[in-house]
Image 1 (cartoon, rainbow, N blue to C red):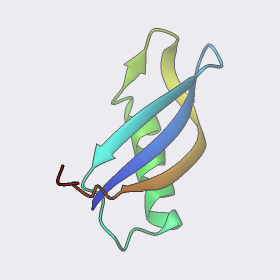
Image 2 (image 1 turned 180 degrees about the horizontal axis):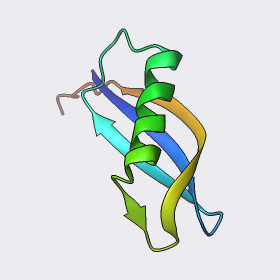
Image 3 (image 1 turned 45 degrees about the vertical axis):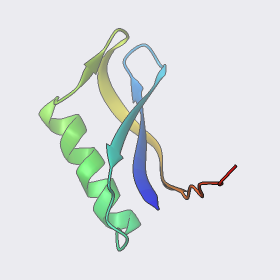
Amino acid sequence: MVRVLEMVFANTAGRRVTVRVPDARADLTADQVSAAMNQIITAGIFTSSGGDLVNQVSARVVTTDAVELVV
């Protein structure tokens, strides 16, 4: 099972930018993710073609489970 944290931000142009973090911890809380997103925005860690990240839009953890089939 693969867990990926997807954090969605708005940039200065008003477009959405998604940052994906593989191998997300199973015990992440909304408060922890929100705090991390605020740190990313405040520190200016990422930029995009539409400018700096300026606001949080959403966050989610996506879990993928693959089952190999024998054919």
